[in-house]
Length: 317
Image 1 (cartoon, rainbow, N blue to C red):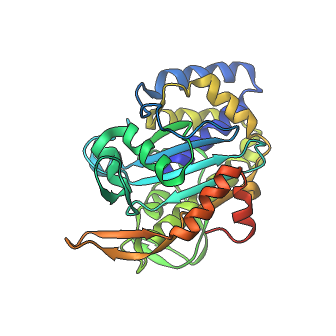
Image 2: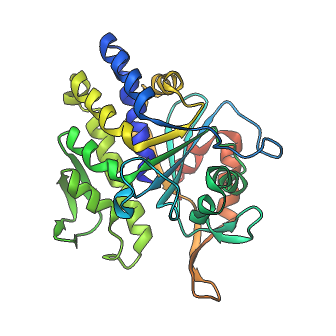
């Protein structure tokens, strides 16, 4: 999930920096020159959900540092590490961030059933988009692939972040306390990667990713950051080499999205996880997470009505 939030930080930073002339020019240049573009990110138009006034961004995280593939995000050589949907309602009153469990067992078009994180390996970005559209019955307007290795330099560019952990745990020499933690970039990377320390593994990891995302939100919108154009510019500079976007999400569109989100601060950022019905295994011993079909139907209806806030008001999923 986390890779997607990095783009959200970049968009908001670009919007804020737009008020500072020479900085805006530099940011536009950085975005255009350092953010890679995917020319064929979407499936064939026939059969796709119709566009709406809301905006849905599919955010895919890969871990290039773990793979040793370098800072440029790549969908080659392995499954995606995280998948999420960012739903921006038409009135831009909130940002709804939906984490999709990477082992969610779903139909993958023309490939039978499988874990959702394999779709991008089987058919590249277009199949990943099609699989999520079929799952949620909602159109994906933009695709973003982000290397999770970008967490470390971004957090350091912000001077560290504060996160709250549900439990105390240790991961590769880093100790994290239950409650508030002040993290630098390396600590934040370890915090979002850890799963073996938890009995609920990936579910705990998603919660930790949400905690770091909130920490980034708070840091970006802090007085210290908002009054320091150089710091905001540095955040964009650090993010850009780790981001690949669909070809329609150029700097102008990114700037437009950023401005539209200017009024949505931390309390209006809602994090939840796609509804699930427990963990299981295939006959071959492959781990999987089953979707909660009833709750998933409610989510589909909420997306169709552009009323995801209703789910959050009753506690989310």
